[in-house]
Image (cartoon, rainbow, N blue to C red):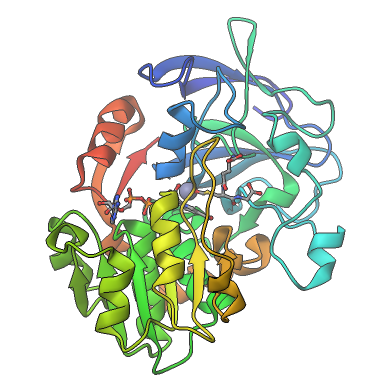
Length: 375
Ligand code: NAD
Ligand code: AHE
Ligand code: ZN
């Protein structure tokens, strides 16, 4: 197949919210600096649903969504040295070129090399897509497009991992689990003995809990409007629960009252701007830090009284939990293999690529953390 167009199955999003269509998609060979990957397993993340909904200002249609996956390198383009056919890999929507001003700064995991192209659904080389259906180009998504049996990614967007790792599990290390763990370890840098509030107990919020427990946090308070989330959250380290619907007072006031003035760290894992405000305002005066993890729709903005920051609260955000993707995803795979981090517990459903629309329904249903598709 090397150097040839591959025709394979992929789920195409033609229009916002219209069911995805399983199509025979033509996948062009990788050009210089590109890698064609056979995707074996992909999970769904709420960010896929968000872009599909039409609320993502970077959303383009028709496109192939998907960014939490694992697979095997099929072929590589000219000049690609760090991976070769047969390598087991995880596509990384946050690239790491190790050369740009972001990568060299030591201050961020964001990478600038290809972000301009991935934001507009094309490859860097020729500003074109490698996907087409009956001659019509289909946009890439987040530089990954994993809802396809084959995808083409930039070489700076692919992490080579231990070939012994089970791909049907470690696909989750493409997004949700690292995001939550890293929000705690890299972005907030939670210390032992801290009090933590987590808004939203989906995969990302539970991974925050897991990270907070590992960091030695004392009180790990989970906040969700769905009571079904609480039982499961105990296994991830949440030790107190609050349902805002059980209270008349604003949720930030409830938390301030519970914690003698506020929590040391809070995490917004929903994507709701009024909850982002509550998450900031439930932080302790003088030092409380709030991390925005959730992705909010186009046009939404955050607000608070500046006095909240003047009096020492800190507002931050995180992308992929601050992990440098190509360097650190393989380390997370090793941590899983050494049983230092969970993955299996986040997988509540398993389906096939053909069943992807059902998988999105499950994702919205509330019972589902991650649904892994066999591609
Ligand atoms: P999820 O939908 O599984 O979890 C959200 C949880 O929030 C659910 O349990 C839901 O019941 C709860 N919730 C909804 N409204 C609420 C409210 N008003 N108050 C309290 N709880 C409420 O989603 P997820 O996959 O865990 O992702 C969470 C968010 O993180 C999404 O916005 C996603 O796009 C974003 N995300 C960001 C990054 C990043 O790098 N920053 C990475 C992955 C996901
Ligand atoms: N395209 C959206 C923003 C989406 C967004 O913030 N994405 C996160 C990852 S979510 C993964 O599930 C991210 O990493 N952002 C940094 C980046 O470089 O995209 C919009 O609103 O424009
Ligand atoms: Zn995601």
